[in-house]
Image (cartoon, rainbow, N blue to C red; front, side, top):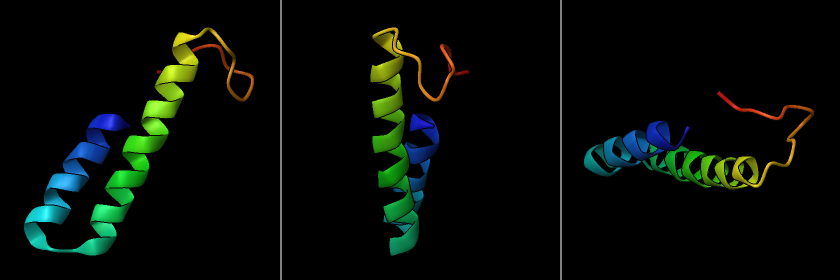
Length: 51
């Protein structure tokens, strides 16, 4: 999710499409939050691992 967010950030920046840029930021933030919560060992939405 973080990688996809970074790709969308780059594409949005190069093309000037603001919605792609916004979606990229959201994916990076959500991916980072899920990665941090997953590393603490806390189950998220009933799942202990995110693949």
